[in-house]
Image (cartoon, rainbow, N blue to C red):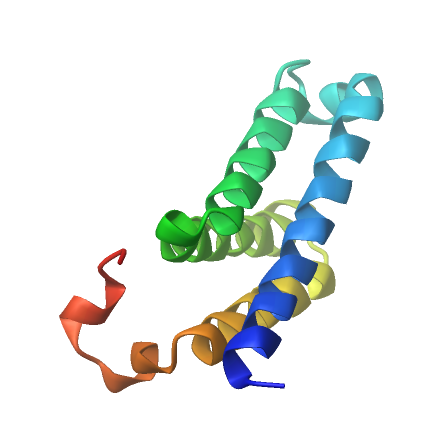
Amino acid sequence: MSKQKIGLILLGLVGLALIGSGIFKIIGAAEMGESFGNANVPYILAATEFAIVIALAIPKTRMLGVILGASYFGGAICAAWLIEGEFPLPAMVLNTILYVGAYLYRPSLADGHPTVIAIT
């Protein structure tokens, strides 16, 4: 199995986790809305997660999905650490899987050239 296929599998695992998380946010929106203080926040987060999954699924926008996913998980890590006071292990694990999958899918990301981020 090639590195690119392993990278795609890892990106797919992150996508599955985001789909599951989005579905649970929609199902439990009432309880989550109370904890956020706004009933619309769970729906906005779920829509963001679904948008990241769509970007990861389309080959031309896959690297955009990686950037959006890394940003989303970074925000989740910051929110869990600073606001909730918890150790954000799930977000850290998913972010690590996302980075490893992106590197295996496109090894040129590690070269440090600014042109490798272009969506091709």
